[in-house]
Figure 1: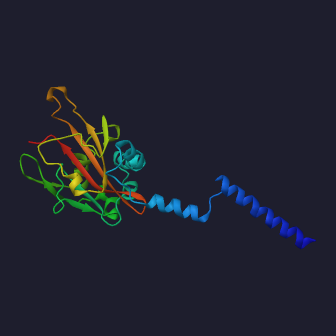
Figure 2: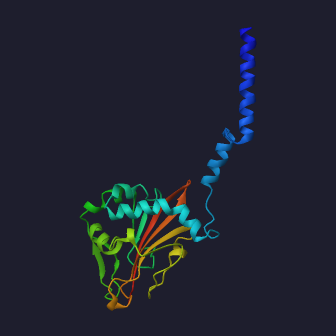
Length: 219
């Protein structure tokens, strides 16, 4: 009798599970694998609307810009691309040969690094930009409160100056989030605008920071 009761109980369980799967309330292993594979699929950036891109990248970019605001470079380093690192461009044109690239490990302690790096050349004067990371951060990364920027766009250019903006050519499969201030002093008629562009690329279903670009009105 005990054996018969066990067989009946097992049969009843499998009948219940089958009915639940048909109703969609139990997820099978194959369903889980299918969903996981779907999440790891590369996103078709070109076919996505700005609203869709915002949904994809909204949380990571919010955490990155807040980490910059709070000087939380431990948090920031967790978003740096583990293979490519993150490239810093002081102006709109990305120079893949000369712009400095930092690994996640280097970003973690960047603010305390006293090394003077050459980041490029100043617009107008052409003099070399020789600064510590902290000095560069104040001038060319978080130069304003970009976490509360007037405008934010996703793969849509806002700020435009005389320097060629080649971000989409340099990072073709990326989401570029632009934090933009149209100006600060009315007397300058908008010529004092500034933008911070954060460039993200997807790897293994996660979005990583690969580029940080400063932009402003240039001569």
